[in-house]
Image (cartoon, rainbow, N blue to C red; front, side, top):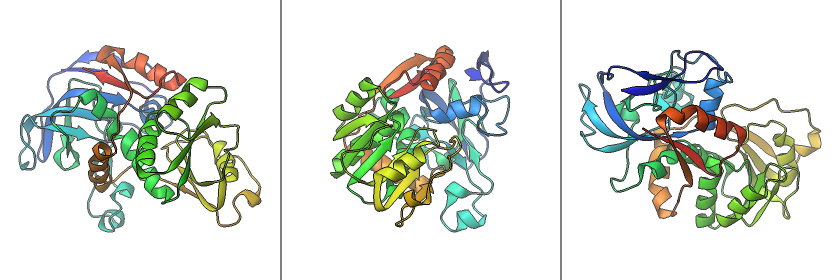
Length: 327
């Protein structure tokens, strides 16, 4: 197999040839058709997330075909198309797992972080954390659904049922969840980097009723705001934009420090919440809703060997939509 491997934090990935990995008990081996590149991958390779397992194959938005079954696997079949997300395994016995909050598991494994991921031609995954995908779909288009879509969905659920939704940071997750909001009849207000008129036009093309810079206030108060950009300074900005009783959802796994802000921005029962990881039920729910909502992902395809280029493009914000590696 071929793989792009991280050996040291802050250094480029290295293209390697390796023997095919074996599927252990309860696992599957998948021939990777596509793997999207997520901002979380940047947080891994740049060292924002602590203690990744090194050497490491990043990548956690995997679409592929089951090639081999480990012992005890009966839920999937060889040749079946599956999606493999960030949450790669949970213990099943900690208080969070027992309470139905497996996203907060005390002993989790994460694809492309604490176990090898999908920047490769083959990947091994826990079969219980792989999800059946439509056989006739485009794997490049499906790949961003496995994290950008799932975290976007979990963030939207956390935002509540409000009609007026603000989205700060218009990247892969935002472009998917804007389509869901529009399908649900919500009014999306998109906030981009100041002056990024191309991203603002992209947001409007997907159904946003207003788009402007993150240094602007929306034309109406928001019921909730979701922050996908890893910028803590946007928290007080979003609090100022939401109505009394409104909610600000921090959707990223990493964010710069939130600056001090006056209590009046939080007062009147405004809330700040975060989302962490995902649950398997999130995947079941969202993967059923995405086709109903007519979600269409915008993607830019890269070869596996161009993974460093794809990471740089995500890092710089040059993309509209999602980068996807195609082995």
